[in-house]
Image 1 (cartoon, rainbow, N blue to C red):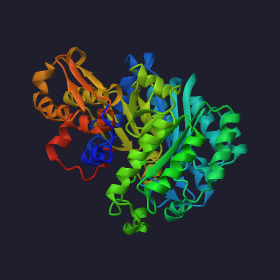
Image 2 (image 1 turned 90 degrees about the vertical axis):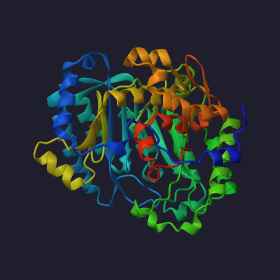
Image 3 (image 1 turned 90 degrees about the horizontal axis):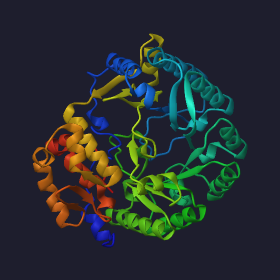
Image 4 (image 1 turned 60 degrees about the vertical axis):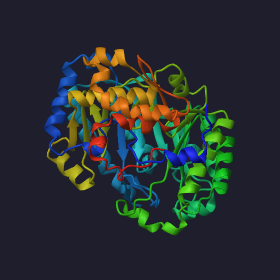
Length: 460
């Protein structure tokens, strides 16, 4: 394979979607509302999916005690922990509205608590939340039950409580171990604290630990990030998520506290990425795909080897392409051939539920072309290949005719070593896997039409 050099990374450093869905969330429309979502739920109850396919649940907990300046998530900064109890009551009401349409006891094989800071909730409140979910859904043995953890909000006693509640996977928000960088983004947490928590989590038997990192933050340099990479390699989590910081202060108010002069330049960011790829490879990690690394024994790496990798709004997953119910403020869901998103404000979320209305305020009913292109894009993002015959049989098209313009664009990528085109399909090369978003966006009808990519992060 051609070496992944800083020159190559610079050449393909263009903007594009992350493709946790297709069409992407920026294409959701307000014309799709709670009535459309309710119909999708009722169709699931009466269709074959209710019997054969388990659900995935995502619960958004928006509260954080302190503000991280880089954050672009939907969150509410407060030290008032008494806000949690009413939020849990509204979550219970939202679940009840779902159960009225789906029935009690739908099978769930994947649950993720994100935010915000889910560990803003006390142990008793997390217990109340899990008990409520178990009363209404059937959490299958051997499922993936994960929670995002802010190391500043937790200790070994709390980790033990999470294990008793049934969580078997943890994701630690680290971002960077360098004290200067942590101070610059207002998220100070000593490396020793994270190492102690990881050791405790292993003693408690958690099946998989993930560490989130961000490169391109203020005060970072390639040399300082090398030290963080070495510490992460020593920590040896089963999974690593490595994200590029996108500085968009005009869109995300917290980022206005970051001085542009403190940010590393484009060359520095590319150098950090190149060195990260080399460091994780040397430490024995498999590059699963876009931002994700895993140890060879981790189910995510195994799924990639076996061609069973999937992708949803939480990123890469070992779970089949199951329906996803999003609960809480701003949560996104997928039911059948529809996407939906809840309102982003706590006030409107509560008001809608007070009127016994599902808090969905926008979404999308996918067209036949959307479903076709989704199949192609997800095949590229997850398996690194598209077999023409499989797509033709599933969607009743002639691939080469339908995608003639796209295949012409791919010929340029073939010349640059990112893909191989054969009579039977498209194969992403080992080098092209590092730039797979750039391959996938060729099939994005919306993006190709407007060419307005400024709202997206860089593809690497």
